[in-house]
Length: 187
Image (cartoon, rainbow, N blue to C red; front, top):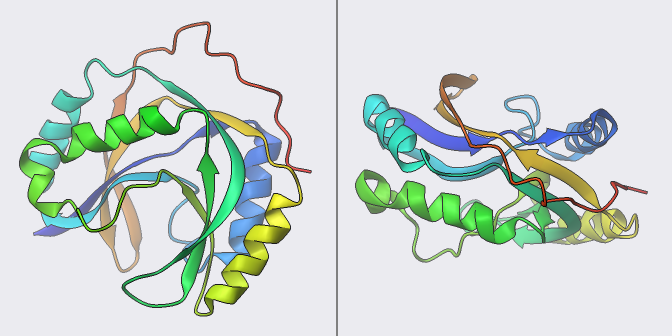
């Protein structure tokens, strides 16, 4: 079996994308492996074709999601120790949780970590010392974040020690026109 995950790469304004990737390049050990993304299904040993078919079916009626990242949050790593720094959406959060829940229904249910509540996020940092993650989150929050973006497709990827390989991209329906979001800012 191959480790398979489901992610969505957000559509962002170019300046916001560059800013997030520059923070990740300095603070996220995984930045070189994969671009900024929301993880909807965490890597699991599942048959690739099963995940591709399930994701395609589960997402057929889902709409694109507009979101706004407004805060950075430190999060302890309960498995490896240390921690991470997440950019967390306020607007769009519930819709991302709904996608997560849809994808973990059916054949992926045995891989759901019920002991860890799902928090939609884009990882921008990681460190073996959680205090360093707390410091970075405070620094980022002083910038009064308001980064808007859209999730327009969901991707099934293969995860290896060398990086990730795209397997299937599932387009989401266009978002309704009244999903206007506030102006983008990252300080």
